[in-house]
Image (cartoon, rainbow, N blue to C red):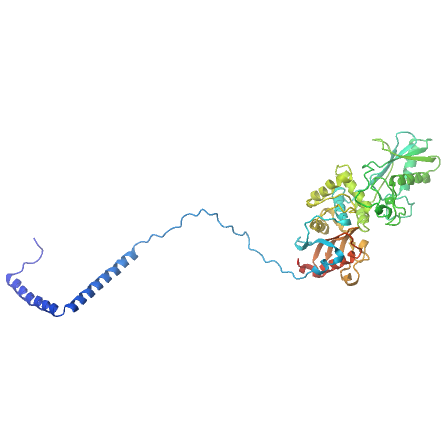
Length: 496
């Protein structure tokens, strides 16, 4: 059955008759205008198709779209800086002119800020080079570390192995003075041989009544007495008066004139000390304790022998100043050997390569790379210290690290004290009082290393080595000019 209402026959015929004429008219129109009808039909089809496409597009756009995902990458993550980079200051003050002065021959050097260690100027600063007497800064610092500023060097008299014999035992105090009481040597305040002799006479007389002293044994065996001169150093340094042989027993630095810094030295400092001691014994004799004729010989004290007398040097802090200000080579050599002995070594020149760098590394973290230490004075051209190692040490000297203020106090001041008292003249006088440094000079080199408080207040550490065959004394003025240029530049110093 159907849900539609039934139609009568009459209504059906009427509908059919009405439809027939309309169909005929449509067919007639199609026959008269076939092209128009074709084009119209195509237009209708196009519209219908376009409408369908739109609806299809809407349907597609409305559907969920899968988003592509990247495949996992096997490349490592790119590193990222832990902190934002900071801009470095552009410095514009150049010292290229003074640094290229022909009087300086081959120049190497380093200039750093004292507070931060920032390198402001570098010219072969990492290359080991000869130092001349600026090496004494290393020896002084090692003495502070190993011996301590209050250490004193003893010289003893002990009983001999036979009656009538006493033994004079040296431990490296070259300041022990043969001058009488009331007279000062170049080492002001030095212990007196006369005081030691007086103690010995008194104590010997009490121990051996009625037995006069007839022999003095000279014991210089604290280190090998034959190991007393580096072969790379000219003997003219000895005869002209700049340096004595390095023996553990001597008086007044073995000078012919104890009141003059530069004075000829002998070829037998031990024998000279022995003769001076015999004279001091005789001068201290109240009568009958010392024989009219006393012989001397070299030898060794008997272990555990009774002491008859002892004097001590001034403390290391004083000896350092007495070494640095006039650049005393003998004190440099003595302190270096004593540092070796106190470090458990044998006091030989060969042991200094271990003793000095070891002390500096242990106490002040100064790197030992590039250090070559063959003596304690800097007289040998075979010593090697990179300039930037020197400035690293100078930073700690300036800061007074672990008692290094003792070394700072011994630096010469430009135009005022020590080996710089007569320097920094003319245009360089603007830096007088603002440069505290150690000078150096050997036949092939002039050097200068220390601290400059620059015109803008920045404290800088510097080390300059001017090296070359035929270098002349006028290199000192060239070094002063270079240092004054650093003073003028201050923190604006450029590394050009």
